Length: 92
Image (cartoon, rainbow, N blue to C red; front, side, top):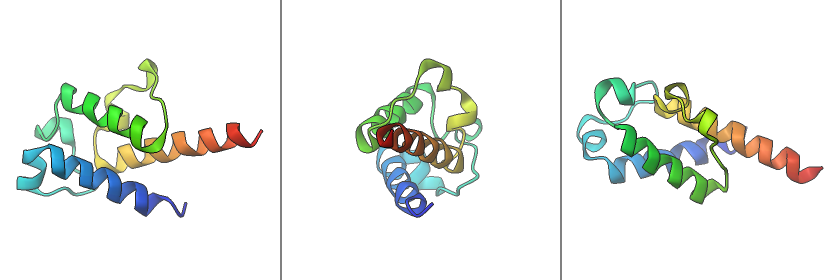
């Protein structure tokens, strides 16, 4: 999708700005954030709040699983999926 680079850049900037370890170690798309200690559970909640505010999406409790927030790639994919779902509902 055309929005993917914009979404990825936005999320990358947020993570680099708010999580010092991400700035120190760099941020590759496949890095496992929880495994490497770049983000913890509170950091994930901050990220979810950012996604909800920035992209007008809602993450349900069922979606708050490590697989959706384990890396930059996973978060971008999750956000893109939620944005697409919202756009489809809006069109109907």
